[in-house]
Length: 229
View 1: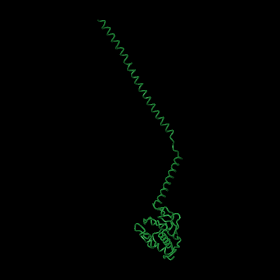
View 2: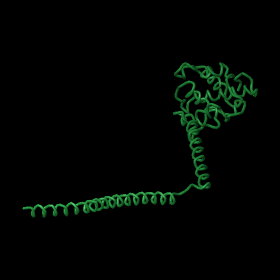
View 3: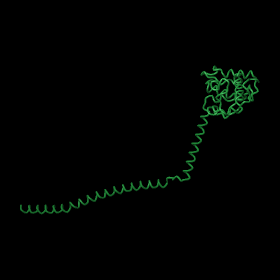
View 4: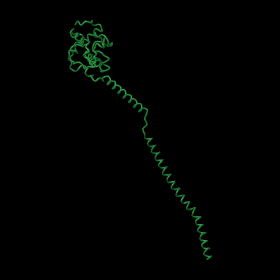
């Protein structure tokens, strides 16, 4: 019985000693596995970061850098486009009136008055009456509302020139460099008087144009105030 206790004691001592030697080894092995795992994860992360940096460097090396010449060309092109747009807008603005085409002499048109002033007195007198006729408009204005009952007021200095000559309203609102006397009548009909233009073959247009020519010649002193032709 005593022998059995001794054997059991010896066996327990051996087991304790084995455990004392085995525990550090197990802990060391476990630690090594964890260290290896961490090391592998860090390696993978380092490789991913390195790949990302390489990609950024490659993209940066291959991205085109704007040279001074290319920048100057782009700037000049932009300025040219801006100028072209400005010119186009200006031209559209000058001819923006919806009746711009109606105030110009139509193709094949033959005036029924003489723009040099060789018009009969009857035609000039008829024109003077129409010049003061507010029924031609839609807003109660007549030609005389701006230019006086005798047609001798409200004209620019260009009115001293024989027709055709520049007229500010024609240039600014209708894009016309110069206008004839009948076109000037049509401008006034459409813009200040807010009416439709007169028929191009009408006696009213011929009479008004003849009177405007007569008024222009009086303005420059070429003729007196009488319709004596």
